[in-house]
Image 1 (cartoon, each protein chain N blue to C red):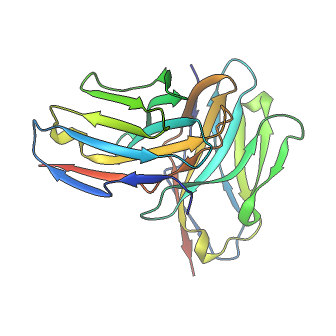
Image 2 (spheres, chains in turn yellow, red):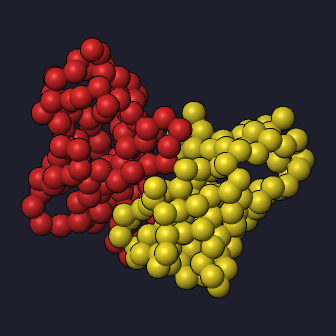
Length: 112
Length: 113
């Protein structure tokens, strides 16, 4: 158990819909990273928050957004969903910018 | 921008044999380098990391990796693999205060009995 909690574990929805994925980092970790894992693209960096502020953006679509709240949990919002958004979405946390990430078990999104 | 290449998508070795997984990175300065392992249905777990100093780093589960600046490589090795090592292995690169941690596409390791 990494200490990072992601909900929901599985989510099935339809095209055009909107979903919210939630991440609770390890106690004391200020950094939260979001990644998308798919068979063809591998593990793609989406976004990084540190203590409530956005620190870096990767290949995140405009239909996607994220935020980190004062209690340090984070949410990833995916809207106008397309079939290609089906993937495993991982959250990871760390204390500082060392790259030593602790991953949750992921949220598997299926868009039908 | 940093990038990582893992040239082998799949590797198969016999149990008890030695293992080397390749990783090449691209980054202008000294990077932070990592190897993570992902078992089926699980999140990723850190095996080892290199920040500075000794270029040969030891990790968990008997793994080690060597940083070679001249070759921009950070290959993962294990002298004798066990069936439980079957998993997907990811090399990653970060850049200190840079806030992106970029992963390679992974190498899936298969173990023959």
